[in-house]
Image 1: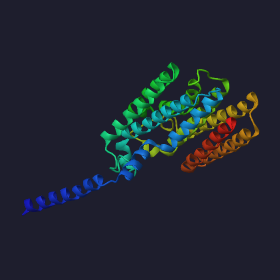
Image 2: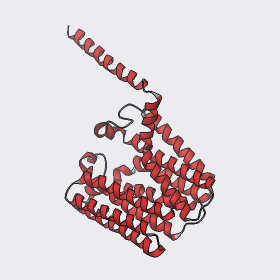
Image 3: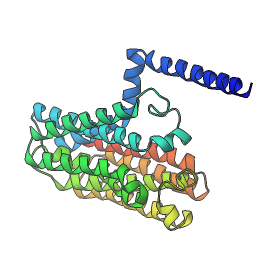
Length: 301
């Protein structure tokens, strides 16, 4: 009798699994496309593409063909980095972010890694057709974006610099496509680097419980309070960088207006962090970064 019950239980489990598998296979082309776009973090890739174009035009780039290849290759590498990160974080996401493409079953892990590798390949190939500088940058950051989730998540306080550097390098990459990197592009890249570094640490403060046992972040190595002081320092450096760029390079008042707005948002984000509104602080920091990007766009318009 017990054996029969066990057999029934086994059968019911199998019956439960089969519909789930069928549901995965029933995804429409539109749903699959949406899942891959979600895996790629298209919004982040578009922002990377805009930053590349800013770097390109601030370096007096005029060749539309070069601008296209630089933007597309940079966006491919950015998307590949997001996809490979989700591949390595699949087990953690299965517990904390079940809605994401891999843990939700919309994309298989194997397919996700192939997708990432193809994006890396086309990104590097695009860089190859521009010049040696863009090729070197593309290869270095492709390696770093693979190494980050593979190894650096265990020492995420180092990985934060890779993520922030990946954002900042987009301006340099666009300039490198022209063969000339002016000082203004370096200033903008530095500003983007410090604001992103502050946001990465803010996310680590927010996720301190979630990351426990799987990652080593700055709030874990030091403590949450000390990590928050680093956030303030990095936001201050970002603000100083933006205001210095306005003064040194005689930029327009539209740039100044949006830099002041983004600075105010970064200060507000830091205040929220110290009041332990960690999630809200992280969300607000995104707005500050978007305002900074608008300020950078207004330089070339």
